[in-house]
Structure formats: structure tokens, C-alpha cells
Length: 234
Image 1 (cartoon, rainbow, N blue to C red):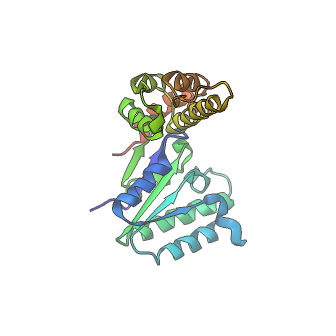
Image 2: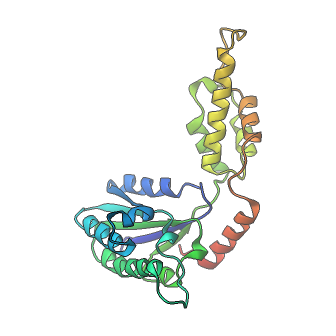
Image 3: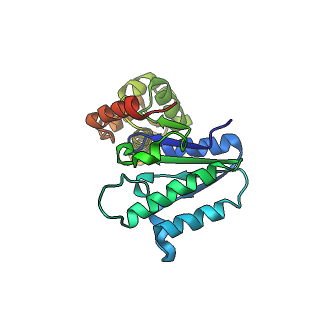
């Protein structure tokens, strides 16, 4: 039986949204993103907004529903008296089994802070997989660089960029690639630039990487690896 609900967790900027969109594209299904911050926009409260949203989604055949930053509506409950945040968590816990009961649907929830999720949310039976999405490895970084290097960047030593970008997120690499391209463009537009100026060089990209601050700190990586051991379900 194919999965009906999946959680993606990992540091920010590691491509969880891209992963969800790729799944929808591969299946050929519609992609619907639910934004927790907008659920109360109709004035009926978060729980009511969530229920109405899932009611509208039920009318769509073959759909991938994506909820990013799901900890906003599925945070860990405490022993204190119930409040609005706990109400929406309870509502979501009720909606997931109903969602799972119909074919042609896939729920993908993503979080940067899996430890903040309610324990009931992570129990077996609600989500088929709990998948870690971490920093790109060497092969993934090479693929990311191939996407962002323009044709004018011929001769760039991609292997050096792959090594130099270890520990960076896809978003970090994209930033460095755009910065290097911008620097090369500004150089080409200068009055003293030769007419046959090439595109961005290896040095341009390495300089851009040296000025790029890593989104994910080492302690966050350590916590993520611990979360994989404790919470991942593949």
C-alpha cells in the first residue's frame, strides 16, 4: 500500500519544500500548500480554518497536500489548560485519519524542529515515514552546482566548488552562485573590461563561497543527527 502521510524534518534551507513539489511532479498530481499562518484568516480560528481547508481539499482528486512549519499547528501539548494552539493540534490529529482513508491523496508535513511536535502526532499509524532531509552530500552538491552554473562559466573547476561548499545548504549554494555571476557581470560592464571577457571563473565562485555564511550551524547538525537516531522512520 502506498504511503498516505509523510513527515520531512531537517535544518532550514535543506530543500524540504522542493522535495515535496518533486514528489507531486513525479506522481503527476496537484500540489496544494497549506500555510498555517493563514488558517485563521476567515476569523473562525485556526481549528475552524484547518477543518474548512481540508474540506475543500477533499474535493480534489490525486493531490499532494504540503504543510510547511507544521510545528505551528502541531506543537507539543502541556498539562496546562487547553488553549487555541492545543485546539488546532487536536483538530489536525482528527483530520489525518480521515485524510488517509481516501486513495489518491498524500499528506507531506515538514518541520525544522521535530522535537517541538506533539508526541501523539508522531505515533505510528498517522505517518508512514518520518524522513530526514539534511545537508547535501558531495553528489548532491555537484548536481546543485550544475544547475546554477551558466553556459558562460565554461572552464570552472566544479570539483573545487563541490569541496568548498561542504556544509552549505542548497539555498546557500544558490546564493553564492548568484553572487559570483553578479560580480562577473559587474566586471564585464566596467569601461576597462576587455571585450572578450569570460563569464564567472572558479575564483569568482570561490570568493563568493568564502563570503557566504552557512545557514546551518554545527550544533544544529549535531542535533539533527541525534534526531535521525531517535525519530526517523524509513
